[in-house]
Image 1 (cartoon, rainbow, N blue to C red):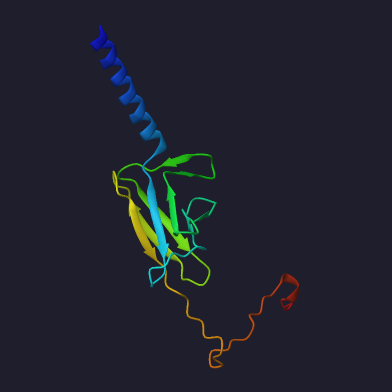
Image 2 (cartoon, rainbow, N blue to C red):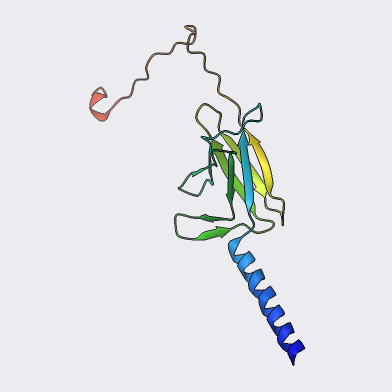
Length: 141
């Protein structure tokens, strides 16, 4: 009798743990660094279909998640084999788009952002201010 109760409890515990793991999703960790290997504390990570941008941890530059919340209220749980798209950006760096296939474990990887090179002292590439026409500014034929 005791063995039967123990086996039932063990089965229930493993089923509950599996259901919780399946519902919470597989954790994906993205570390955003610069070309020198230093974390970029101002970086943000976003899924293209998601409205909200997620800031990385300012100490280590890591973003981690196991689920995304879509604008229509759906939850996108990360499961093995799911292909994810992310946009990574930070002020002063070029944006980076990546596609990642979720594995069962060890879903940690680095994204290296390139610094933007702006030469503000150059007079060769000076451009005039763009002209924006409004409906009332268009010539009448």
